[in-house]
Image (cartoon, rainbow, N blue to C red; front, side, top):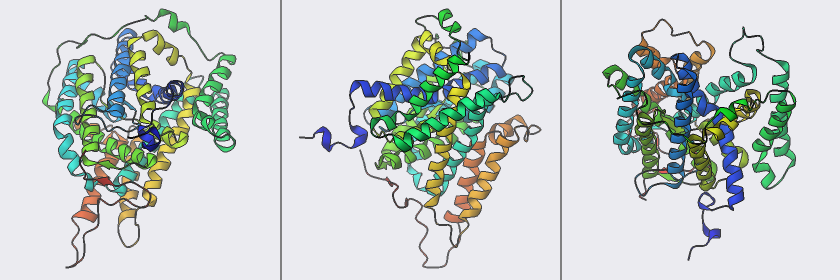
Length: 459
């Protein structure tokens, strides 16, 4: 008979109190990034505040459902069964804004619906080519995910408009710095369960200090309702525009590369092998997010990188902690008043913790790249070109402004650009490269020391 002690740490159930606290920590870490997508899309498309609030609630609800599916799994169909937190992807931001501006919101959700169906259809075939995503590719992708998000973390702390009067407020920067310092000190000097709560303790400390500074405003909580879920197809019947659908399907392919990299990274962190079937189920859950998002006015979800960083920082491996986070997200989506309480946490507080998480994601990517062989090959060039091109939209957001909308959809995202370039260059130099007769091809499926391999075993 199997006992709890014999279970892998990923499959161990923690006491309810710990599950709730650790799950809440995951929610706090990802909340700002998750709601940023509807806020940015709504603002860019000129939607009113009430409509943006509908998008936020729907976004949290769908993210919670997909998080529960990813962590618990549904038979042999859906869910990777790892501590994966799902959230709205930044990869789809530019495409959604361009589609919405040109065709309207019904076309955005028509494209998302089609991308979801497309994702479900290709999840299994995509998992078959996982050998084309060695640590060289996944490590580069994870690194650019972390690097590209640091800009968002800095924006939460200092603001996003350099011309604004409060931009770069020294008090806000000092508050974020104090939170980062506290997280570091807890990891250095604390022991046991306290270490796993380092980020949550930092956030609570930040909220208390922010309250004393007059930065916390709960006025919006009283105006929020206790229960509410956006009705399906809030913007009317979806419209299906060919250009929009193709663009969003390309985004889905990029999301699959991003999610695959994150799933492999989490598997490495929790020391558990993942099979082709595991990856396929995880990707299918991302596809399901498209169908739910297209119906309930939400957004395409992917594995959230900052929560990958949180798993690294806390070293808590139980997937049921993430299930608890999913339940909390669903409640936040169904009970707007709870969401308003979390939304009242000021940007500098979230940003301080986010910088640690985003930088940790980058470090996880670098750790994967450390295991890549850079001697006597072109791998260093591949990483350099991929990261260099990928960082262009981050450091120069208007760099591609004169390109046609269709090309902006691709190159306007640092993650999309990096994924395409590193994948193609790896094929060019390592897969399709001519070799001397009798020379063995490079083992694209092998993972280096200490990183679990993606196996081809069954369920």
